[in-house]
Amino acid sequence: MTHSTRTAAVSLLVLPLMLPRMTTAQNRSYAPEVGSSNVHVLSHVPLGWKFTIADIEIEQELSRPYVYVQRDFGPAGFDIISVKDPGRAKVIYSWTVDRPDLHTGRGGSDGHYFKHQGRYYYVQSFHFSQTGPDTEVGAIVFDVTGLPDTTAVREVGRITAPEAPGGFHTLFPYRHSDGRTILFTTTRGGANVYDMARFLARDPSQGLIGKVPGLDVNGRSGGYHDYYVAYDPASRTDKFYGAGGTYLTVYDVSRPEEPRLLTSIFDPKLSLSHTFQATPDGRYGVSQTEFEPSPVRIWDLKPNRDSLPKTISRPVGAWQGSRNLGSHNHEIRWPYVFVGSFEDGLQIFNMMDPTNPYTVGFYNTRSGSDFSGVDLRTGLKAGDPARELETRPGNIFNGAWG
Image (cartoon, rainbow, N blue to C red; front, side, top):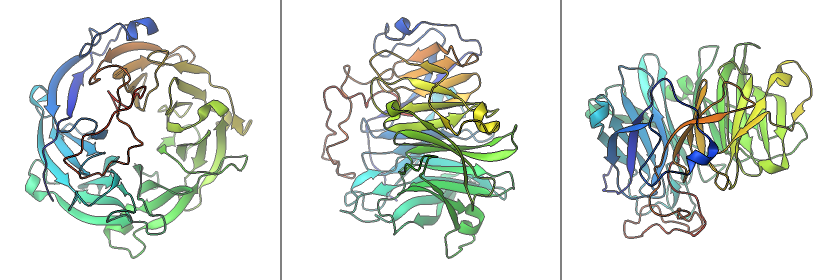
């Protein structure tokens, strides 16, 4: 493990329970570092280089106030922030891959925690390019049960995929309805499925039990960028919601060893499908595409339940922070959707009526002028501390990423 000094930051925000309605025009009426009256910064935590923060994971038990921040486009690793005192959030632990100066590519883009047999684990994805070491490493699993004692944090194993060099861009651990902890990871042509009990038991197969194909109902093939897995209480099934290419897919993974395709959402406008999540009742899906301008689309998944048309092509609603921008990631906490909306910063909209979503709060987290985001085409050498990340005019990869 190595440590490094960087110049990005994470802001901890507080949102009152009741959020007023706002119009789209209001979304762009703020100056830098300004938000709506119902969103306030409680802490601002400097983390080093700008543009090096990827996604964010927050533990959901109040007794474990820990936030995991993935580090991308720089020395690959993660930071752990304690929000036990929300007004004084602080970094309590940082981990960086050995020999970061030799590792090339994107680094650590996604991470999640899971619980197994009373212990807590954090799994961090990596995807290094073939011009450096560890290109076969897809994820590293850490035991974080002992927090806040950071001396107890330890690596317990690495998931490798030598048949698909370049690692995993995203991953998603899921407590299956049969009681198993299942990990889904991106790889070429689909998503690998791992039984984490078998992985932790040092199974020679690393717990690999199956693969969700990157296919839609019309046979179009490709990989996934992002996905979400949840239990659908109406159909009593475990469902996988995948975003990739020009389509979104829903698979029944009640038997993760034998995924069964249920339905696809296909629309030519879905080029670069990025994120796909479902509401807690499984009725509606919310998706994003990674280009601008691009709205967040809301889909009615009821046909999927009733065995009606196998392909959905028209959303029932859409939301956009501003007319000329796109967004990156989101989390649903019904009826609110929290959106990492690039240069529009943090955005929150209400989807109680899925056909008429509306903005209820926002905060600008952008650094610098409009359209001055990081240039993803520069082939950044991940661990080079002397290299300044380049920006590209017209690029929105700035502001709120996750």
